[in-house]
Image: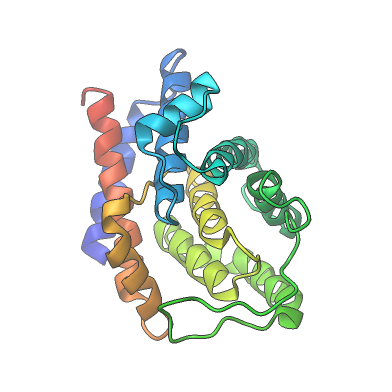
Length: 244
């Protein structure tokens, strides 16, 4: 893992040397990552929109014939949550209200009664042998987790901190739906707050992603490596976009 983090640090230095970017490149990159993250994060959860279709929905405001309404609403909601994530970068931290707001932004068009509020019923994760906490425990677990974040942020490499944020959030599983989407937004938020790039988990890696996260209940080394590899690939992709 150290060798992988060293590679990330070297590329991060190269990326930092090419900052700050000027318009219109900055806006183009934000649009590029908005579409990429919205498509990939939704696709990991079964959304049927392709990346091109996601672009059409977000940029042209059109609907895709034959595709479910919910898939369109997930794309629009995630795009709005993406904007909120960006607005939180300068805070260098996030609060419980930020987490709830991210979920509200993503989910309000799908089910406004559940958007931005912790679930009030038991849920089961198909394919997992580990139960999620019962709903009466969620508020306390979230409070304890959020209190631990500042110390973890100081002690861990930013990439490893991002992996821990993701892992712990999905293990608490505070919402009725949309936990994976919010987890990936929070992962990217803490990376952006530390000066790193947006990380995209391609749908083709879904099996590896889920298996490493399942294994992380007892040993999170594979999951930490998985996230680090995605960071490294994003850095290489970014430098390619800049022609480096």
